[in-house]
Image (tube, chains in turn brown, yellow):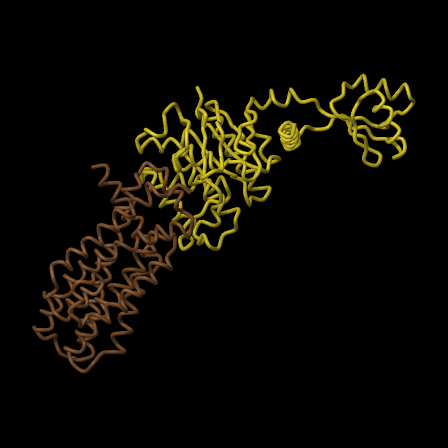
Length: 234
Length: 308
């Protein structure tokens, strides 16, 4: 019970920092801007553009930047040492940070879906067709889970390199790869392409690809724990 | 009982020995000055004490417990400030302290009062709602200090706690540390700037090139040191003549203009030598012993011993 309470403390602290850093409104504003630029003339265009931004842009680069920042800021702001001799274990701090990242990513995704629906309704003056709504409810939860798992690797790279720039740049590179291979069969075997591939071909990715995504997430979790508890002897 | 006790603490980085068989003994309730030049190994020692990094060999006991085997809640008995303290720059002074107090599991009922109390004692109340990135180095240092003691620990480890503080800030910190020591908190502080520390120390330890060359009760340490005599003459010629007289009696001195600093003398012997030769100064005074001078003298003798 005590660990749950401590994890909740860390989550609330991290949520406070994420909120004050403006990640959620910045993501929402960026999404809204892109949506208005590339809006299309019907719900199908609106939904396709919106989902692409949610899955490939915010899902890969936005989540990458957020998850990198939550861990890297402890090194760039040099507050890491304040977290090393506390009544809360380093593993609990890592767990709390990762859960805070996931909750923030959920908040961002929900906000984006609401913006997509609201902007579409204001722009097109018609309710969303059942088919488009079905697509959103089918694609968004699945790709959200993929992107959350994939984003867990950035805390590891951020902790290893002690920077926010390296993992953010890498997450940007993954978006380019996703755009390049989303329409090709090989995309279903490249973890960072799978969310976009799934958007184009819902439910047709290979199970090997899904396992790779889980594997990437596990590497992220264990790698981060390794850096925070074993590797850091500087 | 010792609040800190290390046994043959050694740390090597590759082929470099950062700490060499350090045996610290810090009595509970003391204010212990851990003194060494930059690079002597002070921060490495602090980090090992806090179990942030592992020693190559040797052991560390804090408050009677082996730090390798303590439970996490043990760390609520210890507060620390390592190197230049940093905070989250996008947050305000109060937010930073509040978040840290929550990490220290301070109950919400007392959290706010305690933060306000320490901000008041260290003169931070005016900066309560200011973002940390807008604060001076001294004020950021004070935030670090409050973070170290917000949970009222039994043992405080402070690495260069007075960095960047102005004279008023120095005084505030000094008073606060003395108050804590009176309540029974053990304060272990390292510094390479000694003048600001000597007024509050009860014990000292000197670290040089990773070796603890001496540790002792501070008053005993001062008592063992002879205070030099400073004699002032009317003219520089007289001062030089006095130096020659003393030299003939095997008494070492250094001359600067009309002032003669006479090393380790017994006063009557000096006076007798000068009066006999009719070289009488216009004033005498015993030079105030400064920790810094003693430390530098100790380093000189260490170095010359090493050369021999």
